[in-house]
Length: 407
Image (cartoon, rainbow, N blue to C red):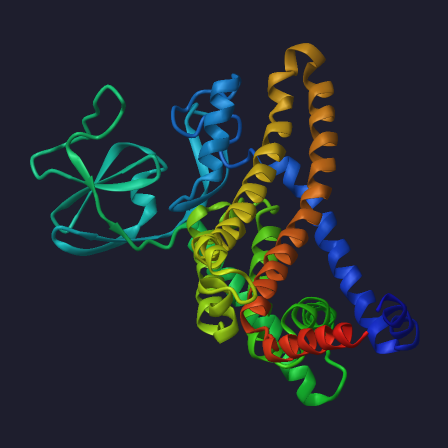
């Protein structure tokens, strides 16, 4: 396989040219990420705490800031600064808030909350009082003028609403989908003009062929792989693009949201179950070729395996991407925590060097996690559609026994 791939690479000028363009694009994206990420990852709030307005100069405040950064948000905060009057000015842009309250649907822009996450800003829209508490929107009681908290800092006079807002993660998914439509649209138009795609299509074609030839075909089989190519390509590019966007100064952490990874794994689970043939279900509930007692024991284990497979998909993607963001931001925070030991220049240099090193690894992990999710999804689908020739196997065993008896 590898010998054929090398020959194809060396003797096919189209493939070489496509790979060259892909490498140039990846290098540009890598340089962009490495240059801007370390300098802007804490720029969302400067060196101020996102919830109390104080400086981020203690381990506790740093952990709170990182936790706030990894969570979803109703707006984008690009950076902030202190003006001449000593007030904190936030630069960013709001996103639409769409909530279903006790008095129906309410829509407004998130700027109404004034970048306050503790619920001190109460917004009244259409006779409904709303407050944002820890990035969650609550509806206050009619007679309440502010949010009341108990000893555990839980709101006592507010309840959650159905939130359909365009949050930062939702915006990221829509943006990734838009990029995919543009890219694959360009690839399709390129094929209409000739055998060699042009523009962005030249960058996408090697990756599409890689997913087809190295993931779909080997795991699903020549007979069935075309049926699932649309899903596999969508999952691969969707995760890959979102992972790369998470390394940009925009601060996306879409694949680090457990709800997103659950939905992706759920799609794989549904496709596997609805694509499974009779051999697949027979191997789960009544495994052939084993004693009846073992069939009864193995059936519950196989049923449990149906659910552990997608669970491993969602946990692996969620944990790896969240840990990557946490490590990068923790290393950049060294410039604050080590300022007294190494000085401002020394701590900043050490922090940036470590952050650049981890950022390089994160670029690799961004592709690797997309590859692993797609690979395992195709493997599970291949197990579901695989056809087993049990009759042929039993006949072979019978002929072997007869030959041994003759001998």
